[in-house]
Image (cartoon, rainbow, N blue to C red; front, top):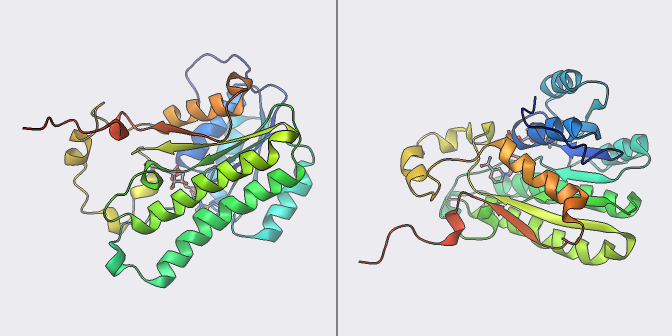
Length: 254
Ligand SMILES: NC(=O)c1ccc[n+]([C@@H]2O[C@H](COP(=O)([O-])OP(=O)(O)OC[C@H]3O[C@@H](n4cnc5c(N)ncnc54)[C@H](O)[C@@H]3O)[C@@H](O)[C@H]2O)c1
């Protein structure tokens, strides 16, 4: 549970979070409940999602939602009725040079990261109403700058970022804001996959100006800013949370 003080910044908000059983989505659920929101946690990892929702108390519920399913979205949106806030955290990574990436791998990743986000943004654009409505998509630093070995993943996240900007333009007149968080490297289970097994994390961390990976809670704090009225005049943009990685090189030119 969140250790930081609550200011009830999400009181009265009805929130749907995808990918809420783990990592960033779980941290967002925890923080938003602590800040007064009513939260529907959704995921395909039903045991972990239900366990977290019951730990968070009566303002949290869990529902199975495969974000790639149109019927799944229709059913959770129907149950929600009125909602104010969407955080799209469901996603996966793939570490594979383009030359070794199969069409099936790329399609699976685009289906989850792009179509899954699209269906959520579309559902929100159709049924959410302002004032105070906010959509927060989770992109990635890898969708803003090219990273060798992360081409398919980066392309999927670039698509998420641009789609969120377009959505921001299309729904602004209804009082709905749309922004993307672009995390750098955050310590979560997302890299617990065979393709990341030979990653040299200490070399990687040495390249981060703040010299550590971020935490899911730090990303949740950014999501709180973008979901609450603290960011009332912020829409159609990205918030990069990367320990300074995108600022430039740490090594001087010699
Ligand atoms: N951790 C990082 O370094 C990092 C960096 C940049 C962006 N991100 C993005 O943040 C988001 C959350 O990642 P995380 O690090 O918390 O990873 P995570 O693996 O801890 O959480 C991802 C969640 O998505 C769920 N999921 C997978 N397929 C799904 C589907 N079809 N429908 C619904 N849920 C599904 C998983 O069950 C899991 O609970 C992802 O979109 C990821 O790309 C993560």
